[in-house]
Length: 250
Length: 254
Image (cartoon, rainbow over all chains, first blue to last red; front, side, top):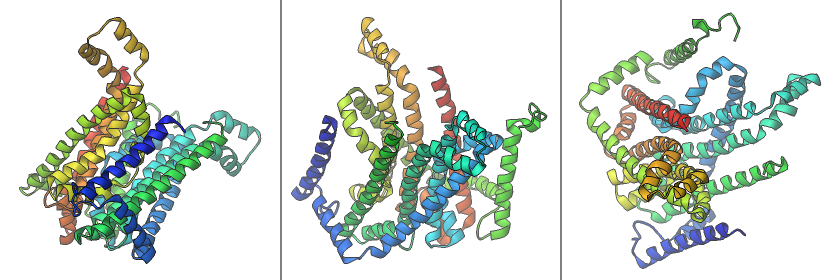
């Protein structure tokens, strides 16, 4: 193992141990933060008793819908924009500025439009994720060398065969980056919306526990969300490494 | 693009942009026709109501509260971010140790951490500032760190040959070499700090534009919601466009 990796593990373990100590000694009060070990047991209890099962399903369903639609729409929009240079010239600066707009400010508007249900948070998750997918699709298509397209024409390949056998494999690493970002963004969009105002879901439950002074539940749930996003990010990262290694890029 | 229109007004970027804007406004108007006043206000009404909001007495105290929290958060995030980023950039090992941790923290939904911040700071401006700064600081650290790492070794060597004083070294070599990347980090940090500040106002606060927005949901007042959203988007968009201009200029200079 590399020295930096060892040190990193040491830093993380030491940090958690320090927080545990500060909580146990009483420097950080029980009303402010519970010791990490109690967070873990609380999380375990929440999972075993099935208390948050419904909210978990609700949040994850919303994330999956937002993610799926943003990946499909983003890939389609990216391909369409790539095919139309004039549209691209106009849209490019807007895409570059997209993430400077605080997307969450649209949430109240969507609540009034669609009602207080799961649609507004899915729309926010979608809006957050779709631009990342579009931008990365464009990046990927830009990287398909003209000689590949020419070669496919020499072999008289149809549009479908060219798309699946030439363009897609070439653009894949960039599409993957887009999907990876879309996962993170749809999570942030959905959980953030639930947190602001909603009728259910993990974010809602955290806000509820906060207002109820129920720190055991609150910290257990926060740990759960952080754990699940870290897990998803890390597995995507590992998968990406495998993909890159297969192409001899890393 | 066909050769016939290239070079004329119909082939210009301005024309393309105008067409795009017209299509956007037409879709907005159509959405209004379809959904009615309950769903959204028309582009024209949104604009007039936004202008009226800018002249109303109740808007400015909230805008001031938001801007104060935002700018304090931005100053904290920028100064601490640049400092920490510079240290991590110069000290390779600490940079290598902390980079994956920072990247991981960057991609988690930080909004889930807001209750913790509320418990530490209490409801109020301190929590908003802390949450805004928490959003903005990480990209600033990451960009600064990379900027420092990428200073060409020959610059430092030349400076040593010239026996520059530390202050002169900083002013004439290190700052100009890192400025473009650091500025990009500050631009990204600006947007994220704004998101953080507004989010914290929307979740739990008694003043600010975020609070006003959430309040308007209860009143079902689409005029207020649309105009505040419009003003915020206009503010963020304009600020970003200006910073992007500076950014491009800095990057070209190098």
